[in-house]
Image (cartoon, rainbow, N blue to C red; front, top):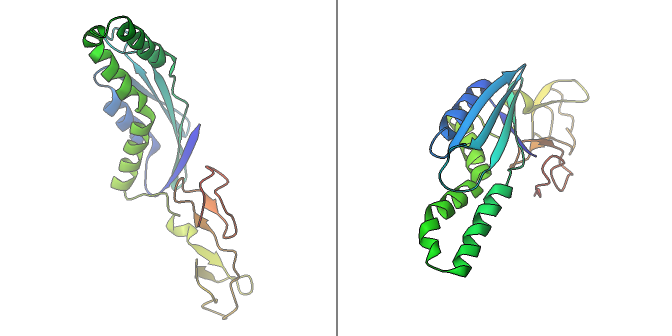
Length: 195
C-alpha cells in the first residue's frame, strides 16, 4: 500500500466523491463511502463489460487535521494478466485473431495504469485546492531551545535571543510529504532517497 500526505485545506470526503465520479465511466465503476474521518473509494471493472480482464483498486483518504493521508492499495492484476495471456495465445495460434481482440488489449493496457491515474488525479486535486506534499504552514516553525520563541525553519539563529538553532531541522519528503529530519538519507515512510 502506497501512502502520500497532502498538507493544506482539503476535504477527504470531497476528494473521494471526485475520485468516484471520475472513474465511474466506460468499463469502470467506482463507489465512495465514509466511515468516521476516513473516506473510501473502490474502483472495479463493470460486471457486464464486453472487453478486457477484471481489475479492482481501493483508495483510503483519511482526514488528519490540516492534512489528508491518501493510501492506495495494490491493484488486482490477475484478470488483466489472464485476458492479455488469452490474447497472446490466440495471436500465436493465428495472428489474425488479434484483430478481434484489439478492444480487449486496449482496455487491459489502459487498466494497467489505473494506480498511476489515481495518483495523478489526487495530485491534481491537491494542487487545485492549494495543498501540496510540502509541510503545512504551522509546521514550518521551530521553537528556540533557549527562549522558546518561534523561528522559521532554516534560520541559523533565534530572532529573539540570537542563540544557534542547531542543525536538526525538519523538512518534508518531496515524494509523500512525510516529515523527515535533516540527517536522514531516505524517507522512513516511502523510501524516497533524499538530498
